[in-house]
Picture 1 (cartoon, rainbow over the protein chains, first blue to last red):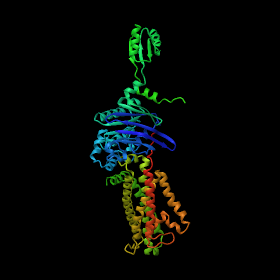
Picture 2: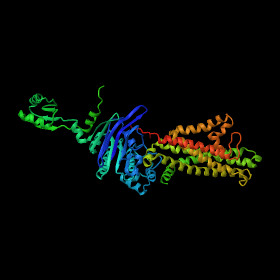
Picture 3: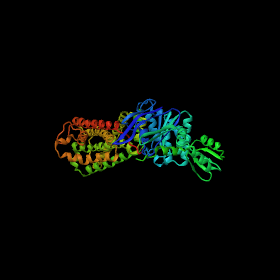
Picture 4: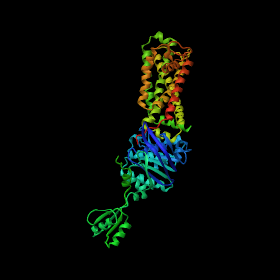
Length: 294
Length: 249
């Protein structure tokens, strides 16, 4: 659904995005991760036609955003929550967008109800909380009944209730067949909702895979508890496996559980616990984006 | 048509037009009252004086130039240009809609200026017991000139706004040029009549033939139209070929 090919963007000598390529499949939630300054926002803004690429291309349904027949009917975008005129009401903001895109005005009330902002629709946006502005952004994104949502750090500044609302909303959108591409540095959020992640660092692709594959790939360790831990360590080291103590009778072994279990069985060492360590997305992210010593 | 309606909706859903209208009312009241209140009775009875008093409606182009610039740059100032480009990603179409909206707004604003000028002048003349002879030859022509100049000034404002994008800088540039630049360029002699402010003033005064620092109506209109075209083309190219700023990475 989204194709980014050899995308490069330079700002006055600074390279924000460099030869970036990835694709986002239809009907899934894809997280777009990277440290601050990694180039996430620049990539999304190129995708949405707001920033012009230096080279390469970013397309949606095979077309540049500006060439889409019905931009708001194809893509709903949630960008910065500050992009509002403070003197305009929430309803007026949506009214301007709907009018420009030829969307019937009853749709405005529908999306306001959908994001639970109907009661505040007549209030000026300047009086909205950050969470309310973020919901208004989501309402604007939904105006054209798009099949793809692109969100740039949507959880920024949201309180826990707002984050939960957003998570449930995105899940419901994806379950109804929609595609979601969401950038975030709130890794816990992405790991809870994303099917796969694209990770960039310094404008370059670092990883693009399923969340489960990524977290499994970046660990491989096994947590072991045994009353004869010292003996097991010797056996493991004899087999060329690294193991270190992690408290009384506990070990962290750099090998999969099957291998550890086999060695323990051969040595007749009893095990009270044998658990595969899975890293969190946060650990995987930090490992993949860790600065290499120069 | 949808785009034009959206642009008009943007203009009408803030208090910008209201504040500009109140500002125009205050300025017109001040300058016309000062003029009529301080002039001699014999002078005020002359048709040429009455015509020059109605030329005060020509304050409107100053306001519409600022209005055009502000309506464009406010989108960048508040970041709403992002939503505008998301809804209308073909940038020339959006600029065309903004121009159409500002032309309509400038017409309305100039009509308001004409009406206020007539009203204030009528009240002062009545107060001094003098007849304001609106049926006299060409007395009302400056009111038509104010409409034309207001539209051209508004288009120049939009073009400059699209070119500069920063609201404070754009408004400052317009005011500095009109208040200082046009005065300074007046020192160079007859060539100053081709400066944008002088040309717009000549459109308002709408004399058939020019002289000194004044152009004839058609030469003035053509000169101002050339400025408008240059600013719109330059602003349009800047708008099409530039990135929309963001605070993200």
